[in-house]
Length: 412
Length: 125
Image (cartoon, rainbow over all chains, first blue to last red; front, side, top):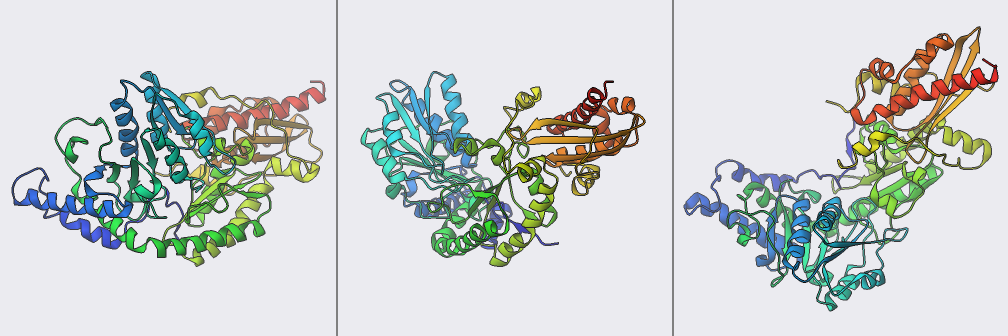
């Protein structure tokens, strides 16, 4: 059967060139990078080479790159580390309401430790307004964290404008660039970031390595205590093979991103243009133009996302959904909530995230298979039945309250 | 291990008894589109027996499979027997449901019971 992978925001297929680069460090070059012997030095050199490669991708100095195990860890380190460093005089944090959970829950953790958190709203496209950022800033603001792009709906924020406002007040600005790095240019100076998170798993690198850029002079408290790795800012034996792979992925991204993104954007545009011609009552989520080249997100009305996802999977098409039923916590995606699309319509959300391995043939296959799946589900949908008979959307009733919805709340 | 059992996937992909009964004796609706699942059950009763049971469901794989199974289990049963179809029985017949999907089985049995109650009310029973 066909296997068309359109879930690249979750993880990308590792590049063969990245894999080959990693192999020696999984086999013969197993020395601990902190050891003083030849094998140790080999690992150390490989990490420092990866640091150069990672720095080059985001226009940073290599001394400003700190390797972590994943994007979530880097976001935790940025938010908690800077808040803690400034906690003597600063007790306020600003984040947007569409941040990744690793940012939102870091902020929530800090709120339990006495910080106040401002969650900025977004417009219907998921855009943060720079003037909202300006209004939220206080003399005691410790850090502002706004993502570069949203992994789910693809919206790209106006980061240069936002960072200009934040940094004018001498407040540290963190940017989560996990969704954008490797897809569109990410430059720490052009974006005006004091801290910036990026992860190789989103652009053909392995899982297990990501990085936090920390501008020279920024104050940050480590969140993992132990040895002197990563210049004392992140203890723990380095995951050398993953870091080497991450570095290689950064090098490849720097050279090939433009070409890859041209390709994914063409596939994206084909799906975004053609799908509404084949399926009625579907709506694009996210910004129409300020959008990641690899992101397609539609809400299909009158049907539920997990059911569509399962049928697409039967056809060999791997996608994801932001519906409540598709989440283990049975909660609708916080991003779809934040852009305030009708809750019933949001249940029919389907996210297709593309990679360089996809082709226009893949797009055509999706365009061919998807309409029949939607038809099958609509034919059994009471909401569609009601709409066809009355021309009206069924009013949401009082609903069914499941106690155990709350039991799962903490497990995203 | 796949997320759903083989039986759930079979009923999800090939749901039995989908549809509407135009001259139904009872109709029951539960759920809410905002929660992500909603079911409408239709029953046709003759001589106190559920002669026909059909459903329309908006929901996830589990919700659709549960609807299909509930309709299959209820068809041919007497009204009293059908009222004894419980959530646990439905889940068991489906070879189990993931823990966070158990509420879907509640919905299916509830919708069926509501349709039967609607029939009873209309017929003064």
